[in-house]
Image (cartoon, rainbow, N blue to C red):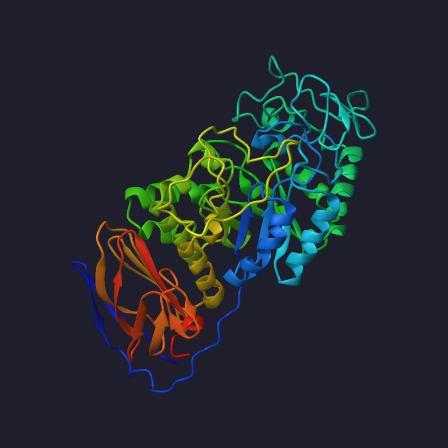
Length: 494
């Protein structure tokens, strides 16, 4: 087996010392791994728009897509109205039941799974009675034929003046009081659990391959486990448990229900990209037994999501090239599995997506110049998942597969290189100037297309070509605040 080249990094230059004989000429290149462990959250995309996008997602290398909640919800233009359920009818401003089923079938046909955001902790936060999107009548604590306060379906914690959570250092408050006035379901009771299981089973019947459990932190772990208990064994379960500094509720408590979203990664990478040592991004979550991160095999990481981009706890599309760098680091990371976020531009944090006169969301469309340098008007679909730099590295990750024994990281200040043996190599430049160096890539000799700057089309590369010489070394110019990524599936001479 080809042994590694030793690398010394001195004053910004890479000095390569040969420890073994050069790669034999004519050695056979491995096949791309065809791994698809990257998810994409298409926030507030309609079912028809997701169905139309799935072929492009599959081609880019995405394995699954996370939708916004599909159940009937309160009326209103704000983004958060879909997070206030009125019933479990699959009818929403994003589409009908039939459209959702057609969407899951269309995506499955091209190998992309669909995961739904499931709101099961609460119902509405509306004090006045109303009518939901599909015509269901409701009151704050009364949902005819579904939930009734008189039958004990809701919590009234009695611990605060308005029954709302006031202290996140109190476990009982967090799990039994109301989250901003949202009617809190008594998920510890069997009638509530049974009805929620029916809802999730209905989603599975419609082709849903998994669920994100919204506000899981506000339910006890046994409640979440009971609610997802009847899902198929292969279903993906992602519990939303926001890790709060000094808070007693920990994401690790929810591993019995499935995988968990690791919020700490996105918060930590923000500071690293904006001014810290980039090598720290390669170490996030890597320490065995770390008290600040979930185990890697149960964690899903993200640069941002619909909540964090509004609260500015993380980077967002508005951060341009910093946002690209963070996504590249996430996709190259050895820790966890990544979820790319894709939403719409906004200046008002409550603003929903563009809607027609009836309140139905207009189908998402991605502009041809979507990317970090574009100026975004409110309501425009930002389409981060399709930004060339991000989509290219999604394809890189699919080609190189999960990090194995041949995975290595090389660091020189704010230049970090990731080697995945003979399948791929990626380098990130966090400096304000271009960097040209000679790197040991681990690749077999050949001409490789940089999938960050271009694509391989009809055998020709539309961007930078990286020439890998015998021994695996290549002289590469890495643009400022950007990256270069090559893999066996994008060989110009292949």
